[in-house]
Length: 308
Image 1 (cartoon, rainbow, N blue to C red):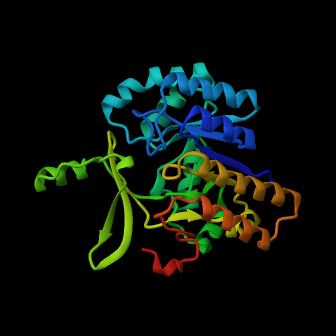
Image 2 (image 1 turned 60 degrees about the vertical axis):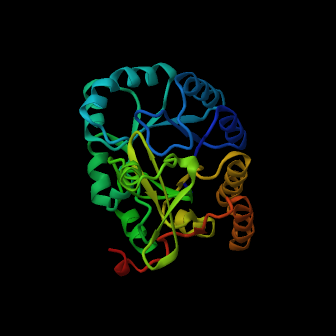
C-alpha cells in the first residue's frame, strides 16, 4: 500500500513542534500577503524556524501562495519566492496562473501543488495542471464520494483530501462585511476571531462562518468536515494524502485531533485498522472539536445528481 501523507496546518511555532512530534509529514503555513485562510499568518522569522524544525525531523514544509493575485502582488512576489528558497520551503500551494508562470520561467525548485479550492472538480482539470508544472493538487471539498472515486481512476498526479476542518465555499475579493456595515451603520469586527455566521432565509439552523481580511471575504460550509469514518474507503481508492485544517480549532484541541488521525494512519499502514477503531477515534475527534461548530462528512455521502 502507498504510504499515507498527512499535512496539518500550524497556528504557531510551538504548535508546529507538537505536530512534528506526532509524526506529521508536512506542516502547512504562510504569511498574510500571499496565503489564504490560514489559522494565523506567520512572520518571516517564524517561517524560517518552522522550516528548520521540519527539516530536522526529516519532514517538509508547505507554504500557502494560493492568493488570487493582482498585478501589484505579482510585482512583489519574486522577493518572497527568493526568501522561500532561502529557508528551504519544500511545497507551495498555488492557484494563480501567473505564479505557475514565474515558477517555471525562473526555475524555482519548489514542488507546486495546484490549489484553487472550490474550483478543482475533475481529473481532466487536475491532469492539465500536472502537465504544466503541478506535482500534486487539492481537490474541491464539495465532491460526493461516487465522483471522487471516478476522479481517482483517471488522476495522473496525487490529490489531497480534506479529512478534518472547515471548508470554504465562497471567496470574494470584495470587502462584503465592511460594505454591509457601512450601509447599515453597524460598527463591529470583521476578522476570523469575531466568530461571525450567516444564516439562510427561512433556515435559522444554517451557520456559515464568515470573515474578512486583506484578501476579501471568506464563507465556509455549514458544518466542518470529519472523514475519520471514511478513511478505509478513501485509502482503498488511492486517496492517501490527507489534510487537517485547524483554522477554527485552536491550540491543543487541534493537536489532539491530529493525533487521532495519526493513529488511524499507523493502523491502516499496518493493516490492522477496523471500522470499530475508526468510530472510537471519531468520538475522540468530536470531543476536541470546538463547541458550537457542526461536524459531519460534508458532501461525501451526497447523491452526485443532487449537487449542482
